[in-house]
Length: 463
Image (cartoon, rainbow, N blue to C red; front, side, top):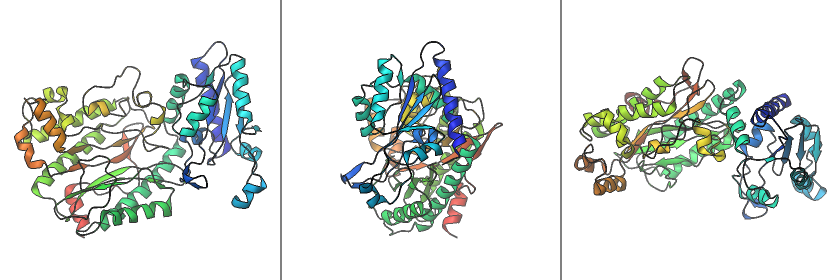
């Protein structure tokens, strides 16, 4: 948790931004509902608690069952929660009072949790707007329904997004630290790869480190020899020779900031000729993207440039044919990379996507493409200093998708489907770094970039 002045300043800025969106009349109140404990099987056996990220950003209190109201007309705020009673203290030990916690986050007023309902109903009775963000948890959804609130406030969402998109220096330092942990965790995973090793054994070593040094992993670990399956969370396979192992994983620090890296390794320590050709192309795409990242450049254009480089390389390999610009326009790259180039990252590994992916990732004059691949781009905006994004191109050979395009004749003028049959057991390759947009360009986050060039990968696996 930062000093209380940080949260005071953030809330003051939010009030100012909301004043711009409602320059006349009553601006109303902004309602923030923190997360509560969630039972896994029964009430006292709960999932590991994770606080809502927007709550952490404006209030910093990492404890369950808190809420707050920010008065957008006079700038005052009230924290709502209940002091622990003796029946609670028996199990938890002494806990700070709600009033003292309010002081830690810079609020002078506090009240019992039940008073939240009264305050919201009073505002509604006075005709004051009640602004709130979309809930991501079931409890919060029910709470809003109980309060008779159904339509999230786009004005509040846009104000929050505008603030959280540009990371403060103090946040960048914490993201760098989370990336340091993420890089260390990936090195542990890489060094544990060996023919005959069960994937779960590697995941256990990774996640043990994440729990020893941070909050845990920032999302469920992807470690698989079936890289063509993007979110493969099954780890029951044994490492086989001649395969490719995709490891997409990150650490969430104890300060609640995320990292997210992906590397792809030859399971036997050396790439086959076919694997090296595709790996080198993905590596080149990663470098192309990083070289373009700077203020004012739309990340959508970076994605399209990566698609162009990818298709140039696939054309050289004889897998596609024809004019590359025409292929880019037709969306041929989506067959090989059906996901977007990257996403925002910060307090969430996919930062703020609970607030609405398009509101977070797209400028007002941008619209999401209907094309496969480009249509999955989560971050398309023009870049600004302080943006933290991922650079994660990939090439995948997904037999079901290839067969679908082949059967439908989709982009048949450009794709050599017969040659793709030799890649049906290939899997996939993804290479991901976390990147900060700076005043004059970009830098990769974390102190020690994981080996990524093909020769460097083989060298580190065979040292």
